[in-house]
Amino acid sequence: MNTFIDAFEAVGGPITPVMGSDGFPAGPTNKGKFVIARCGRHASNRYAYWSRIEWGTPLKEEAGMLYVKMRGTWKKLADFTAATKAEILDKHDELYGSRIIPNKWVFNDFGHMTCYYFKDLNNNRRRDKNERIHGEFIHTTPSNEAETFTSKPVILLESHGCIHVKPTDIDTMIRKKYLQKGNRVIVHDYADRAPRITHTGGQPPFELHFYPGDRKILVKGKR
Image 1 (cartoon, rainbow, N blue to C red):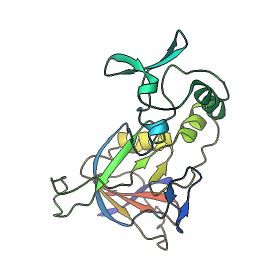
Image 2 (image 1 turned 180 degrees about the horizontal axis):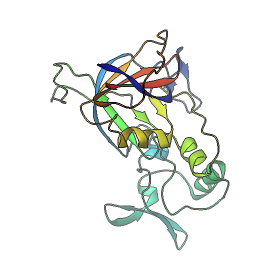
Image 3 (image 1 turned 45 degrees about the vertical axis):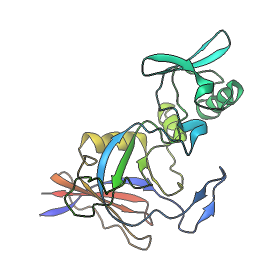
């Protein structure tokens, strides 16, 4: 018997489309049935200012210049982002309360982990050549990463359409194989209400259900 066995806080995009403060449009998370493709660190050309560089990439200052270590080689930070030293100092102060150049990149908008999913057109749970990665992901954020690191309450904020989760929760979901490649993700309508969890603990196959109206991800498993 398959039943809901676990739950996590999660936040999607706003139900009414708006223009975000960063100049990018934000809207409701797309409902539908999807399949997990993979999880990993994300680099983005669309949000290139802070996110062209993957989370955790080594960072250093040498002779007044900033460098990042890409594929084993130190390269000028300016080759990857227009962010200045002053902006990086300000950003670190805003997030962590100290105006320093950290030894790794902790500013990527997608946090330390991103999980990608796709529309499974032939229902085989494998990503075929004609099945593209969906434009919305499950990921963390720099502010939530900083809150976790500094032991502050983690407050999830609305996304542009992606599904935001807490850093410790995405790690837990990966460890428990909820976000394993091939598992299904069902994004519900904002009007759908999340059921109560009556059991804890279960076996695969796992299925994730995101209820944006209730700000929850529920995990269905076998008991």
